[in-house]
Image 1 (spheres, rainbow, N blue to C red):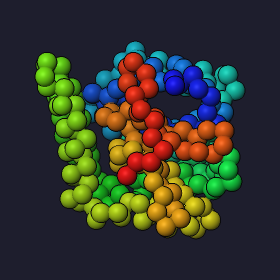
Image 2 (cartoon, rainbow, N blue to C red):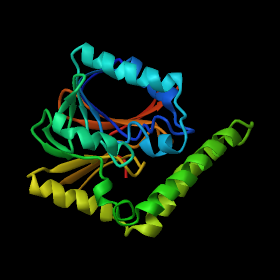
Image 3 (tube, rainbow, N blue to C red):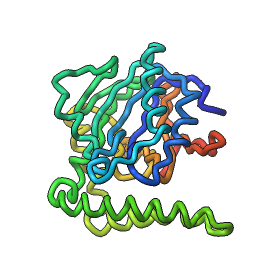
Image 4 (cartoon, one colour):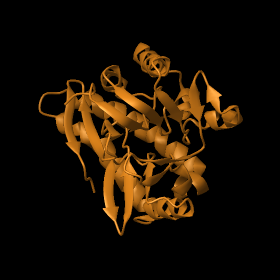
Length: 256
């Protein structure tokens, strides 16, 4: 299977374009073959925090945005839900549409099988982002340069495992500063208020897709470490695609 498979809906988040060490070239290979009716950009697409510190914008980053706009031109519905790193988009949300892209603070959609899902970036459920912004920004600075450093280390023969260290470090920091399960519980409460049986988010860079107690939690993952996208097929079945420069690595219908 490749990205040329036609999907009903595709969700990607946390591409962090403009941040050192992102996998924008890998993302581009995914978008080039993508066919879907609706594409959700679930926040942190452009990393405003990183670009404020230093302007690192590549030709590949440009090509990613151009490919998304090409999807719009072909008739794909594109919905952009900004996150905390691209919160500058939230300032223009009253516009509701930019260059054919719909702008939403969050959204609710119904899958092909009738299930109702709440869609949001998810930073509002992160205790550190909400209550200690300075710590969140400092942590992101460390994360960016650590990620870029480990990318270089991983190029040494036999040290490919270094690519996994940034994700492990980020996961550890989240467990230290936020009670386990608090993020998912926040999503579940908000979804319940919208009569939704599931929630789709990004933000934490951990791909997930599981159902517990009748509630489905899905996380798109990211394009810094995991390189994952959440997809819905014509029957309403959700799954996670794990991508590489060579194409599809794996498809999972349950994660976590």
